[in-house]
Length: 211
Image (cartoon, rainbow, N blue to C red; front, side):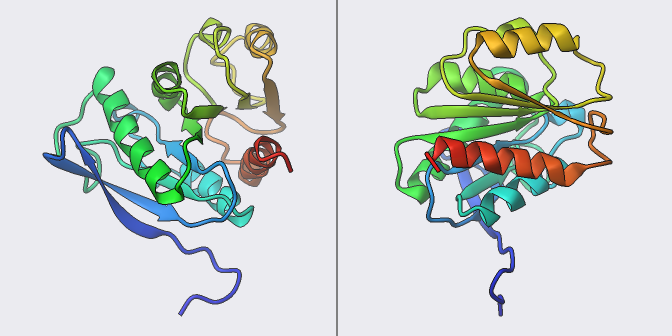
């Protein structure tokens, strides 16, 4: 039995590739909009839906009342198929997006992407107006790729993460009209101050919801 206040995710299957294969995912119900789709790090980064950042963001969003969906790309975990890259990862994300929208009964959603999953998120947003906001956590991408974004943007990085030039990242986020959240005493993996990532993501979702 689930007690009041407990965090309960349910397993789900995501058809992909014309329904020939399925990916595994977990969902959490919620009453607020927008729902949140969580993109894991890319398979070559060893990423999956059980990544500590994915779990933290899902937990924080669900506690704030937002539906969530996180998943494993094809060939990762129990997801069927062969591990892909590039366009194949975007196709996986599109399949997960369709399920997230259907589950929530909405026409728009927000996307949180982790590490190299940020590249998948940008491609997804470019193809689909249904992506109404992007939250990129410790992104691995060219900061200039953020400039062309036309939806609300939040970028969360650790103060000790030196993979991207901070000044260039801050300038690109500002030009895109987004927000940059720097977590003190944290690196790219957020072994320290992990809960602050979830709080920042949840606060951003509440702003998107107009609350």
